[in-house]
Image 1 (cartoon, helix red, strand yellow):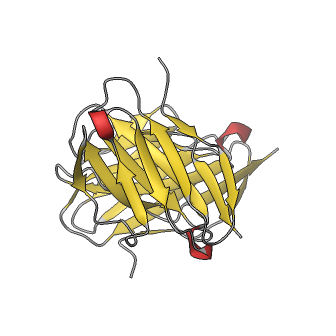
Image 2 (cartoon, rainbow over the protein chains, first blue to last red):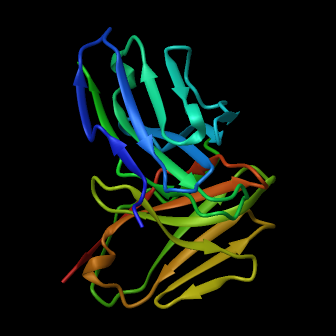
Image 3 (cartoon, rainbow over the protein chains, first blue to last red):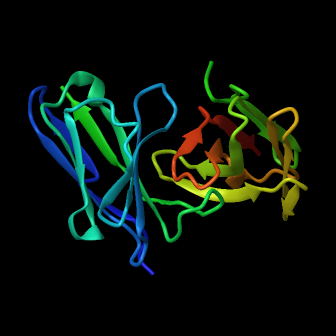
Length: 115
Length: 110
């Protein structure tokens, strides 16, 4: 069974540009999460989709970030315009059920560098 | 204060050693607890969930003390392959959001 996949694996852009990250969850997983780790900090939650609906977007840093999950399958996270502090590793995770004990499976991450 | 705090590390131990990592959490609404392992430049992977009664998986033992809001991970007979960063993760009941500690880095040396 394929795991969570993310594209691209790396992205280097200039400040002010736009970047779109993609996540394909494990097939059949209704729950999809975005997290990120900026340099020197812990992994932090960004948001959670249940199918195509945003269940919790409390971790989104500001309105430069837009996440979508049209059709409830893959998700995109767009950063527009990108700022230097957006650099970091963006992880996507998915889980089959929603529950505090449910395992979340992480993708390999997208390493974003904003210059 | 961070919601999840871990031993800062790093831990450098010889093969065969026993090593323990500690983690504390501040949100008493937290209900589920996990240890994840993250290898360099890789994604976090679930090592084990932590149950109230404590649980063991081979050389790994996890303990939870709800009264003290404290979680631990014990690794016995360390192997070179145990070298990684260990992440303490906490989740509230029926919430998808996971809260991570900074991680503790373990290096096992021959």
